[in-house]
Amino acid sequence: MMGRRNAVWGLVLAALVSVGAAGHSGAPPASMWGATGHRIVGEIAQQYLTDEARRGLHALVADTSLAQLSTWADEIRSDPAYDCASTWHYVTIEDEDTYTTSRRNNRGDVLEAMHRMERILRDPTADVPRKRRALKFLVHFVGDVHQPLHVGRGEDRGGNEIRVHWFGELTNLHSVWDTRVIEHRGLSFTEYTRFINHPSEADVARWQRSTCVDWAEESQALRDELYSVADLTDYLDRDGRFNLGYEYAYRTSPIIHRRLVQAGVRLAGLLNAIFGGTTETTCAVPEVEPAAGACALP
Image (cartoon, rainbow, N blue to C red; front, top):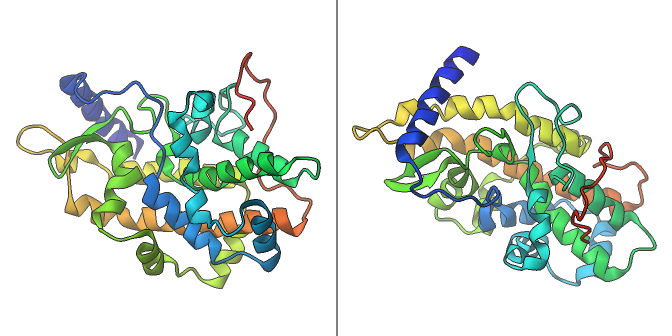
């Protein structure tokens, strides 16, 4: 498996050299799932909230839905005041590492950020504006950590450096997983939710017992499956391009759907625990000394 994958990625990285700077962006990894995917996660979560959680949310955001809140953390990325939060959307863990053994980013990562947001929401001394902002970040980040390429390798920046064509249009593998496969179906987020939101009661109970670190480890474990399903040599066209389309969407959709549903169910479980007054922290991670000038928001 490892030899096969390494051979595949040798071809992929060679292709990157031939593509060169076309379409290259030095920006941080794109926000996972895109707007539709994040709204699906929020819509699913809304359906598993307890009455206590609904009351707690209403006190912070009135009748604003989780689907509406879910895209805020991407929308504010155009505001320079939030530039320092760009690293909060992902975490880099190499194949041989776990989160606890990996080299941590002292400017923050998605797991550290979720831990901090949960702590603020549980803090009885935190004021409403601060809790409201923490909630909007948390709703988004729970979605983020369930996208396997947001628990990515440094080598390819979570798929951002892997140039592919989607139905002939130049893009990158990360964008395909964020938005292209989901948008390909042409469904609204409410329609998409109705199609995929059918977990068993046992699944819901098991998923809600897990921790945020578990969610990241699942995404990391899925990377091998993703790179196998995404064996790009299967999609080489006569011009030497990785041209993805209908077959790729068909093969990858089951993974994407499962992760969207898990994210929504777990987001609800996390909010139920926070507003239900349980003392056990879902997103606890080892502390790391922050960088000088690291983002202190919220």
